[in-house]
Amino acid sequence: MQDVDTDSALAGVRGTPAGAAAIAKLKANGASVGAFDAIATMPDADFVGEGIAWDAARGRLLVSSMRHRRIDAVRRDGSVSRFIDVARDGSWSPMGMAIDSARNRLWVTTEWSPVGLTPSRADSGRSDVLQYDLGTGKLQKRYELPRDGATHEPGDIAVAPNGDLFVSDGRAGLIYVIRNSKSSLDTLVRAGPLVSPQGIASDRNGERLFVADYTLGIVAVDRRTGNVTPVPRPRDVAANGIDGLVLHGNQLIGVQNGVTPNRLIAFDLDATHSRIVGARTLVRDTLRIREPTHLVTVGDDVYFIANGGFSMYDAQGILRPGVSQVAPVVARTRIR
View 1: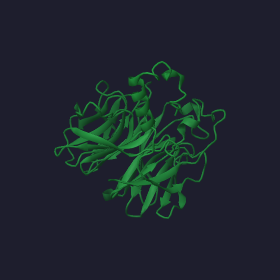
View 2: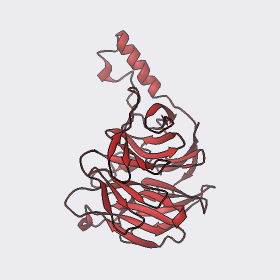
View 3: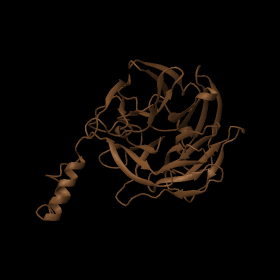
View 4: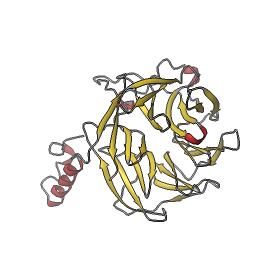
């Protein structure tokens, strides 16, 4: 982040009372907030971490690597082992993940990305949703997104209590659903109401979804009709730039990587979950939290990928000049 004391863009206002007040706020915004622990460092400097999920039955976190096209398991002691080779199964860079413990399922979204190692250019534009056996890691089903000439990005997913799976398409502005009673990928929210849907969290009553739109903020989606309703919030609460999103009691916890500096933020909901009544930063650290991606809650703990690493590569998947690769860190903080 640019030093506000030397930023030439602020030269014209630095000497004014209003400018001084604004600069003071900018400085405060760069200060570290909250505490977190590094639980594990992924084994490859070029891992490029994206998704994270909690397998309660086996006491492990699952973390997806866009670069190596695989999913690793992280134990509580920080040890890391390989679990699923997505490339072996004929798919691309794994993105979001969701676990359906009741049905022993691991859901994974993938898309072709130049960041992935040895990607076939013939697959450019392709993406899918995979269903794995959570215990064995064996691929059970594959649902490919439409090959309709549009650009798709199935980045985030969530499972409802009845087993329905919801998938956000950040580029096409769509929400898909795979009903537990069906075997097809259907469109729940068609193009129009959303700009760039990201994180999804099922509400406690199971009737609606909270969706983080990167541009619009938090919206509610009726999980049966697909109707989209903005979730009202105070004017001083910024809800744009949210990637990963989870519901924890009466709070929505989000990874806000579309603002500077990046942070984990908690949105307080009213008793009916119909509006956001306030927000606070849980964790912010300009040195150790850079490009965080997804998160998962385990009790009152939040586990998140502190530094995904996607931006280290250019549009051709080549490491940017002068950039040193840093392995992603899985971090943990406490919800307070």
